[in-house]
Amino acid sequence: MEKTLRTDNATLDGKGLGRLLDEIAWACILALTGALWLVPETWAPEGTWLAGFGLVLIGLEAVRFLLRREARGFGLVIGSVASAAGIGRMLGYEFRIVPVLLIALALAVVVSVAGTIQAARR
Image (cartoon, rainbow, N blue to C red; front, side, top):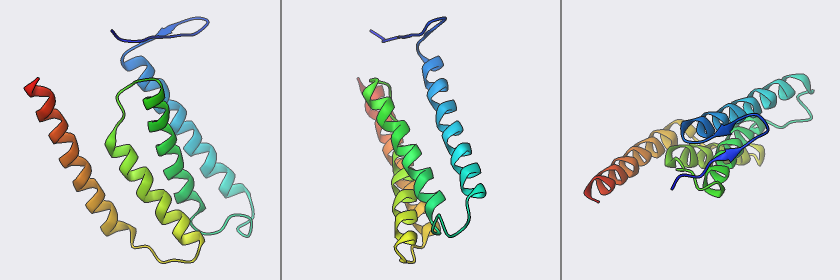
């Protein structure tokens, strides 16, 4: 049985709730970007945007999990890598993100395909 979210003027279920969560995440990313452009560079160390972006993706997946929606492994993997890279950069560590992102992308695709195969067997 699929759960629905009731608001004052609409009921969100299925893809409607997923789209709403995605739009909220995009709004957070845009607000983060705008805020970091407005503040002086000394207020936000290098890597702040990347860490914030990763935390938004992880938060999105956490909300999906709490609402018992299908979480996306891709968002969780990319969010974790981005957060680690951003925090590492803020602490002064050089983190080669492109190779790590390629590996994370490959792992996410493998996990996704494995999940699809396992679901098809049921």
